[in-house]
Length: 103
Ligand code: FES
Image 1 (cartoon, protein in one colour):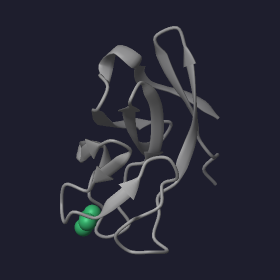
Image 2: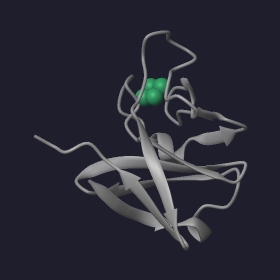
Image 3: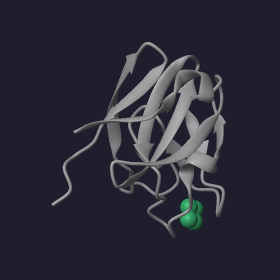
Image 4: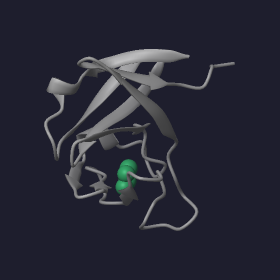
């Protein structure tokens, strides 16, 4: 299921945002010009990763500082933890994210 989560112009390079779309919380980042979408909920205690600080490809959870690699969704702080990484398509200025169907 592909859903529109915002516009490329909403996320300048080096920033991110938290979006609710398609029934899910999604973190959207502009990593050096590439738009990336992850699950927004930190697996530690549900911090909003879209509101975390982005440095290069690494985002830091705003609550307790767990770090995630936006290129994979893997947690750098606690091996084995991760968030989903969603496929992104850009259509004009629209950011479209491919989300798994909810049961
Ligand atoms: S909720 Fe993200 S590090 Fe604690």
